[in-house]
Image (cartoon, rainbow, N blue to C red; front, top):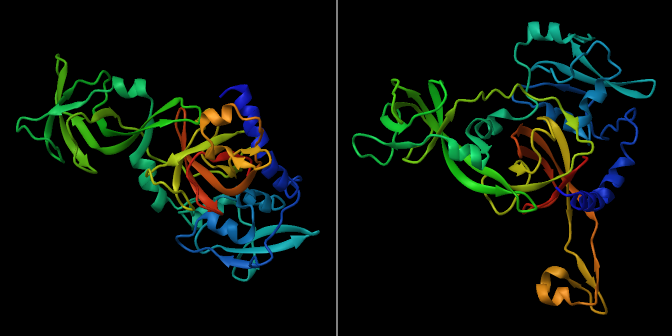
Length: 359
């Protein structure tokens, strides 16, 4: 992204950031919702984001709610059956865990001993399929991967237990994921990010070969594989859960809905233009939108309603509209040049291209 583009984006989201920075200028101030419960029993199926949203308008500040409780080392480790109690010490809100009508400040170790499965930050039953079965791969990497060719029966589809001839992989792995190319993704400047790919299944190499081809056996099928599907080494799909953190200086754009729908809203998974070098899983970002530029004259009009030639030779002053915050998202999986994010709040439907900045 060029320096001019970065400065332009900064100007666009500055209005929204300034509006919320007044509320969060000090890390020592946590605003509790007026209708927040005094106690809450953690239930199986709850997520940390759900519970945080009960107490805070800014759920990503959940760790701050525990900052005065020195015996809670990791506020992300909460377990079903825990009773959370909100109270105040010297005017500051503090969260504690209550059990048997007695307040006990538990350490993460003791919680782990009694409750082996902590609740997740996000609803992994919903996001798990996207985490395991969808990914983004660069064009050069994709083009270099071996592909499925065909089988002895002349089949056009392959399923579990089928033997298939493929190009021989160059590395020594024995198991490979079958992937299928989807949409070509580009950022807001038109630069190619890579292909959206689907996990079709998995194969194992049957025997070594000195030639250019290799026999593989399909050992897992999410859907029917086809000639031309590519093979790449199996990657770990463990999310290791997340630690919430607000973005600071990062700025990006929403590229598209992962399922290629025209409208984007709350609980949708989206592709954003920031990669692993820019953000980490668990990063919370604000979503900002702005209206079209306005051509200021006696009869103001929107630039999008004018032809490019007419706009070019127009004497009207071009007025950029400010951007306003319309939602939030959490990044849960990163790639080299893009990431997947889950929209946790949306005040209006989106179409892609919205700006991302501080929450």
